[in-house]
Amino acid sequence: MNLNINKMTLNHLNSIKDILFSDFDDFWSYDILKQELEGNHSYFLVAINEYNEIIGFSGLKVILDEADIMNIVVKKSFKGNGIGSKLLENLISYSKDNNLKTVTLEVNEHNLSAIRLYDKFDFNHIGIRKKYYNGESDAIIMSKQL
Image (cartoon, rainbow, N blue to C red):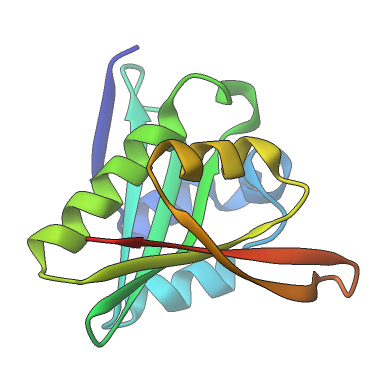
């Protein structure tokens, strides 16, 4: 699969606005993503296939000398094709290029495919936030030193 990873713009976000919940993820709303894209401390990427279709996006927030990965989202019909790995790879490269020292994230304890992805990229499990997701599921805090 030919895949282009580019910096995400408001035009990209607007093009997936109507399918954000149905085709991607119901965790991040359009308004929150728009606010992050317009912010000074966020960096978002978009994955576009050879048909010029947005099939994934990811973002991080820079806090001092650390990157906090906010999301890696792959279109439901394209999961399992290595798109999440490409997005994560690019977020880590961006962090290194900007002399950030650590990349941190939290992931739902039940999101086994995401946990495997972060393990593959040598993230360490450093803590747990009890009942973080909807007051039910724990968040696993993971971190990678750069």
